[in-house]
Length: 73
Image 1 (cartoon, rainbow, N blue to C red):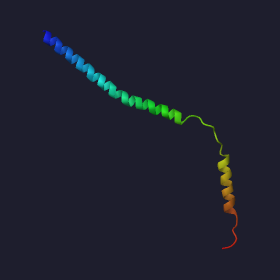
Image 2 (cartoon, helix red, strand yellow):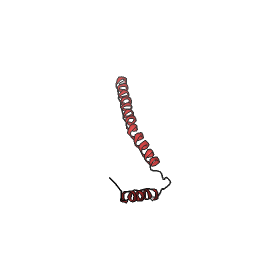
Image 3 (tube, rainbow, N blue to C red):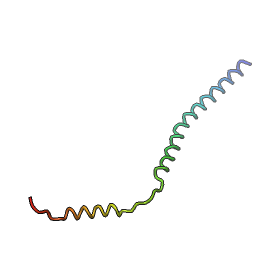
Image 4 (cartoon, rainbow, N blue to C red):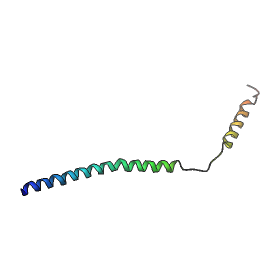
């Protein structure tokens, strides 16, 4: 009778260890997902907004240079 109880206890403890090992392995992707979410929030944080002015000014200078008539060759 005592042997039966001890074997049942071992089975219970072993099942608990297997369950905890599975939970430990599930924590790895959970932590990776949380880390990825935090990185995404940090990467998309609001920065100083720079208008299109400098780019449009550069494009206008480029067009003006391309429209100039070239003499020669």
